[in-house]
Amino acid sequence: MPPKPTSIRYAVLAATFFVSIFMYVDRVCLAGVKGDIQRELAIESWQMDWVLGAFFWSYALAQVAGGVLGTIFGLRRMLAIYLFLWSLFTAVAGVATGLLVLIVTRLLVGLCEAGAYPTMAALIKRWFPPRQRGVANGAVALGGRFGGALGQRITPLLVVSLAGVFGLAGWRVALLLFGVLGMTYAAVFWFIARDSAKRHPWANDAEADLVTDAPAGPPPTFPWRAILSSRNLWLSGTAQFGINIGWAFVITNLPDYLEMQHGVTGDDKGYWSSWPLLVGMAGMFAGGFLTDWLTARIGRRWGRALPIGVSLVGCALAYFGCAYAADYRIVVGLLCLMAIFVDIGVPAIWAFAQDIGGQHVGAALGWGNMLGNIGAGLSPVLLGALQRSQGYPTVFVACAAAFAVAAVAALNMNAAVPLQPDDPEPKLPLSTP
Image 1 (cartoon, rainbow, N blue to C red):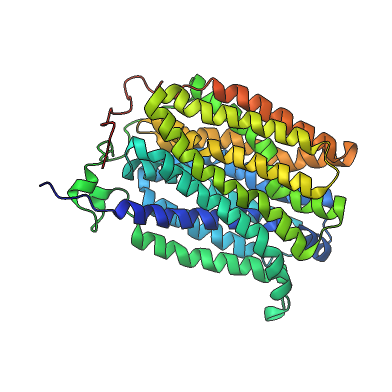
Image 2 (cartoon, rainbow, N blue to C red):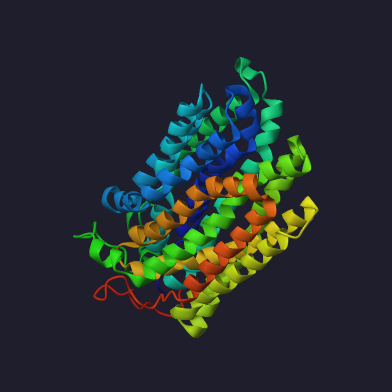
């Protein structure tokens, strides 16, 4: 009997899951302390919108480069470095003395987080066969959503409970704590992970044989022309741009909406702000199984496009309903539906990049993430301006329109067409151990 494959891939998946948690805790924590920062540093609301958006600009523009660095210098090495550095700059934000320091630190956090998801996508491809990637991708992205919900929930609590520690304001101590914990976990991830099963001392050859397309070294050339001319990648980027215009409201403006529009403050603000991200995790879990199930039955073209496109139609309808809801609990409920629909499509977006990317998965996912996070960077500034001039109903209608455009783009994506025609996805057995 041939030896049974070891299960080290699940330990690597779990380690990557926790990296994703830290990634989103550090991403959303500033939204929960926005008012405290403004009061202490005398920052105006429109200036704070730029602070919240700064993360997404550097995060967007460094996506492709961040994914390439992982391919060249090693996925495990770069992901550990990324985690350590963004945690360090989160801690530095905790000692900020003014607007400029806040903007610079958020730019640096975004810069260091930019390569994380492309590198994670490449790592998952190295460890999991195609029929298991949707679920594995969903688990990693689920960590991000859990981290976002955790950050929204506990940051206001930490602000209150840690106030006065070391003689500092609560928001400062919270950011310092998040930073120190993330830097410590970078060493844990380094100990557990490797770039592939062939390089892991705990994995046997049978587990390494489950995935046959892990390259021996970096690709010889980077396909800039293929990326820039890829209809698929432009459609993916357009879909993610629209998604993030609407979805970023939850992690940048929702706490402010609850406080300004409905007088919800303190622990209650953190409680209600965390619900969309928390409930959305159910969609992430289901979306991984859904895209794998559909792909096995109707092929990659629609097995990836349908979960993304149809779910985005649901997002548009949910936001349209927010425009007519008077009670903030109804708005939060509709945003929970929106988050579920978004997260149903996320594993398919990752799998799409893995399907078409060949040896350039990090760059393929990074391209879509880049355009998507340009949308996220615009979101707090654009939606903040709309709110001040037209009110929140107009904000919600704008988000609905962004999701509608994203749905059209997603339904035209084709995961059966590789980025480079001479570098198709290997045809692995339909059933794997």
